[in-house]
Image (tube, rainbow, N blue to C red; front, side, top):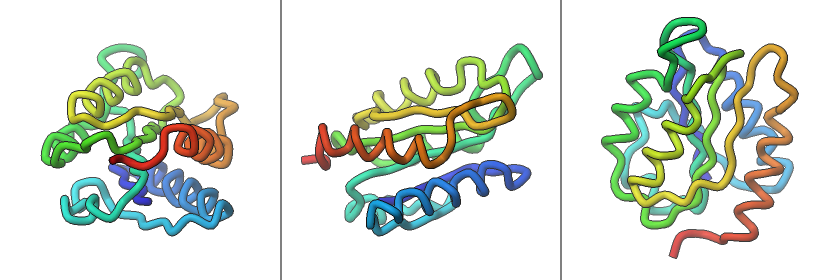
Length: 143
């Protein structure tokens, strides 16, 4: 599996690292890569993709996925049913996760799990990984 992330101030990279560590407790082989560096050929051997981004915009309005994350996702090949978990880091993600879900589904990815990490949020990287793992077991790898 691959955890790909777009990080501006290291918060998202740290969350991605904690997610990767949590998946390793399930004995998963996990690769981490900045989202902008994710090579299409790396997806060929991947059963599960996790994408994370920071939230760009004003504090309470006009928030969404980082523009660099959206551009990187648009460059990805069709995901052909690949299970995809998404996360963001911000105390107020607004419509970020719904936007990411729509973009992933438009690229033929199979959305399986979502999480927003930040202050005052009870979701942890470990619980996100557990949710992804449960969902992945129920849908299986892309065919």
